[in-house]
Amino acid sequence: MKWTTGLLVGLGMVLTACAQDRDHGENAQALAFVDRMVEEHNFDRETLMKLMRESKRKDSILKAIKRPAEKAKPWNEYRKIFLTSARISGGVDFWDKNAEALKAAEEKYGVPPELIVAIIGVETRYGGNMGSYRVLDALSTLAFNYPRRSQFFTKELENFLLLTRDQNVDPTTLNGSYAGAMGFGQFMPSSYRHYAVDFNGDGKVDIWTDTEDAIGSVANYFAEHGWKAGEPITVITQPLPNADMTVVNDDLKPKWTVGQLAEKGFPTTAQVTKDMPASVFSLNTDNGKQFWIGLNNFYVITRYNHSRLYAMAVYELGQEIIKARGGRS
Image (tube, rainbow, N blue to C red; front, side, top):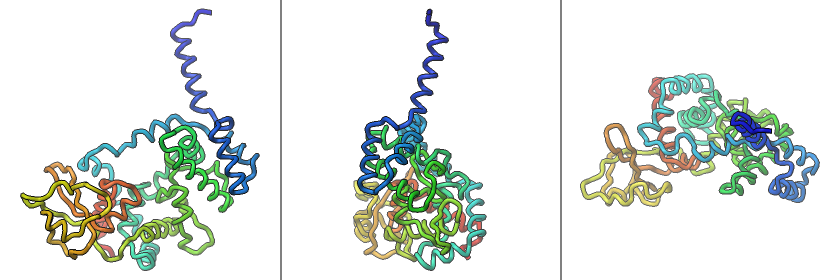
């Protein structure tokens, strides 16, 4: 038989499709994972083997994890993704519809409504886009086919299966992001198990369809990571001519104080105290570099996503939503 270019291309497409849809039933790492889950958590072996055969390796997930869309963008481009009229108006609408739960969350956890709303807005456009991948496929693909972060995603797959068993949910039915993040606030399974709460007291922890639980869970996450009620998040600074620029963007964690940064040439006129933990960072804007002092609560936002740009987008979106509502009340 003569192999034509068309046949070769067709064969390549078939082989690609087969690789794309390959399950994990015979994957050595998956089999070792099953052994451990049976031994450590008393899972039924045949049930887990059926899940491994059901789970699919997705090339689109592997491509997405290697080049997250927003990572390499400068602030003036990154900002435009999240600070849109639709996301601001959507935030106003979400706040108005959930004002009671947001007020209750602030009273219990000390986290202001605009932050909770902004997190949910940035993560899922207020529940409009919670992800289209099966969580089982996302986590198994990354656990067993992405060596660089295999350990992390294997642990998340473990937490996902424990979570679905605890909640008596079929793990093949839940969708999320390409990384396996879930619900309104896009919690990874370990975060779901540790920080999600039954905020409305109905006996279930549901951040998929229950906005009250989603709101309480985001607030609890920040409270557990050290949020300080009533303290500012970030304040602008104008470096002095002799400012020590080596401290700019040196660490997400605030390892200086406001007073120390002032001594290094980064003063601020904002209502902050000299002993507050602080860092200093720069942002590229359309009008040149802008410098900000990140305080404890700014750092707490980066615990949700380890990015200054992310934290700043959440902060600014929250401020714009307040303006659009005509205030916080």
